[in-house]
Image 1 (cartoon, rainbow, N blue to C red):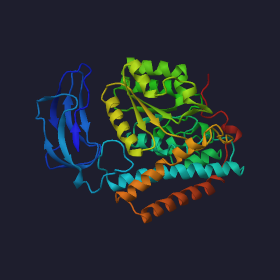
Image 2: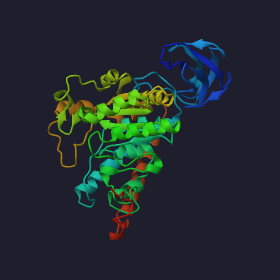
Image 3: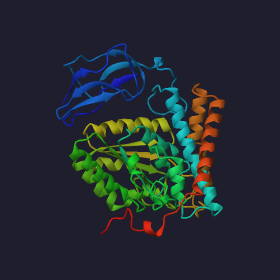
Image 4: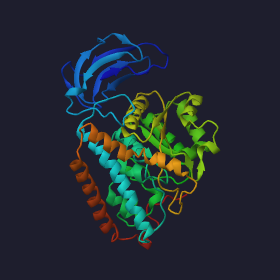
Length: 412
């Protein structure tokens, strides 16, 4: 695996290697800082995209390199894992087996959670309404795996997957969906406003595109405080037509704010297909008009999403401004719980079902030897047991009382 110099300089000038942080022969972990470099604007650290042993340092301290130059060679064959190949469409990178299995378990947890919640609503035991994300698990898991614990995300009314990927527990979410005071929002948010600020997720915003300017404002705060935090902002393709999208992206670009805009392009805004409302359906192209980078990624390939988000997060953190990632995916469920999806052609549904992110990743794990059927069965049982236990507890969680009406409320 080669560690390459990213395009860090806004002027296109060479970038100087200031200090090597590891020695040849050292083992490095994914995300570990390898080398410190200096641009015409700032000094920053470059991180390893995967684990392995540092074999070569190709650029000495004090020397300059340009974007795309190879700085170091890392031997990933000594990382204790093999390379995912069949489902992974990005550059081949070696990952530790535990990391891969964690990605799989997190995606499966989202799918099983959503299926169980759907059943609870259908049987009439859960209040409110739901907007689900079956089929989009790789977008949430891939992006959140690339974030640090102190980073934040903003979400939408379709936020269950984002919440589980960011580290909210099944229990606090089910308590919230049942309206309990032990829920992540004390029973006042429900499905459409799920979140936990303590875990880096502000409650979901139900207004289409409503979270985009909020994320931009958060990124401005990070910059003013001179912290290393970034914010990843999830939204759907329908939000791209809103004025808030354009205004927030323009502001983020002007001020080089550390915000990662993540468009989960599932082809439909409610029941309207994207090609009926946009002549240019490649959402990532919009970034160029504001002067920053956009990229379209296979949103059903969790490792492709993870690698794209990791690179984008590094760019945001290093002061290069925002990035727009368009993740092409597909929701298997309707817009909301009463939507039978009759507007989705059978051939289209069949195509995307054949590209299910969880099945694809499971097959890759089996083929490449990172898991066997017993491993997958154990994960399945662990996920099912966790959800069923949480459901039983959530059904009896205490509800807010009259005295709670005026607590945690901002006066206008």
